[in-house]
Image 1: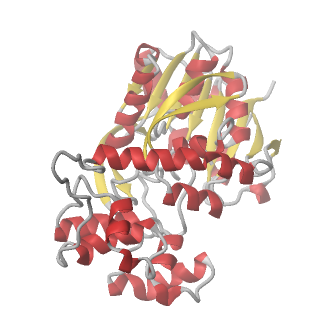
Image 2: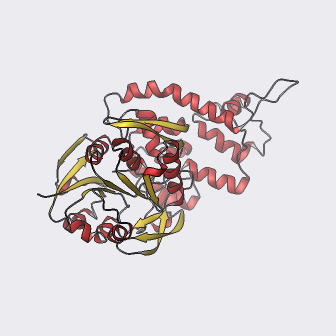
Image 3: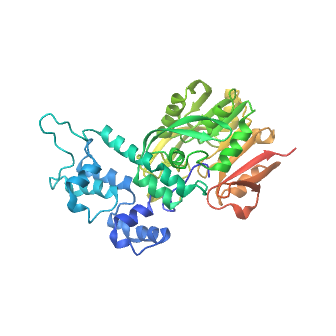
Length: 408
C-alpha cells in the first residue's frame, strides 16, 4: 500500500478501545474488539479512538488547557497512578472529571519562580524529548524487521510518544529531505521511528529507480507529498505534478515542499482524478486530528463511519494532459478504490504505452485495473517481503501495490 491503512472499521483503534475500557480485556483480537464496537460500543457511546474522545469531550466540556502537562498532572494527582497506565488516560480523566473536581495540572509559581510547564510549547518539548530518547530502543527492536504500519510495537511507540516537528527523511538512492509531523502524518511517523528506508521499502525503492531519468512525474493521491518529494530529490530536472483533493493534505504538501525549497519544482493541484471532470464529494473516515489516508470519492459500505464530507473538483488524466501539455512518464495512483475510474479517464495515455504506472489496488478492483492495462507487464510490489514479484491474483490482499510497465 502506498499509505498505511487503519482497521477494518475505519476510525476504530482496537488498542485504544481495549486499553481504555477495562471490561474489554478479555477480548484479545482486533476482530473481537471490532465486533464489540459494532454490536455494543457504538450504541453505548464508547469512544473509538483517542482522537474521537478528545473531539467529543472538548466539544461538550471545553478545550484542554493550552498549558496542560501530563507529567505535572501525574505528579500532582498521584492517587490516579494505581488506576492509569497510559498517558492518554490522564488527558481524558481531566476533561471528563478532573476539571470539575478542581484538580490542578501545573506547578504554581511562587515569588519569582517561573512555571516549569507554562505553555503548550513546553508540553511539545516534553513530548519530543521523550520520543527522541526512545528512538534507539525502538530501532533496536526493529533492526531485523521491515517497516510495518500494523506492527503493534510500532503502534505503541508512536501512540504513547507523540512527536511534533520536522522529520529528516533518508532513503537509499535519494537525497534527504524534511517532512512535517504534528503527530498527524503516518508517513512521517514511520521515518521518525524506523529511520532510513522507513516506509514501504520496496515501493519507494522501485519508485526512486524509475523516476531518476524521466521528464515528467504524476503523483495522484499525493497525501502529504512523499512520492513528489522523492521524485524531486532523485531527479533534479523532472516536472512533478501532485494531485491531492483534501484540504488538509493539500496544505501539508505545500508545507513540505516549502521547507525543502521545492515549491517551484512541483505543480500542486487540489483536485481528484476520475473518469470525468466536475465536482465530486470526498468522504472522510478519520477525525481532523489526523491527515487521513482513506478519504474516497466512492465511499465504503460503512457509510455510518463517515466523519465529514468535502467537495472538490475532479478531472481525468487524459483531460489534464491535453490541457496542461504535461505528459507523464511515471505515475503513482493511490485513490482509495477509485483506481478503475482513474484509469478509465486515462485511455489515451494507456494506449500510447509510454508511461509506467504504480497503482494501489484492492481485491475488489484489481481485475478491472489489470483488464484496463492490457499490453502492460504487471508485477506485485511486496512491501511485506521487500520484493517485486510476478503478478499473481492470489497475492492481492487488501491494499496492494502493483507495477505496470509497457510491453516491448
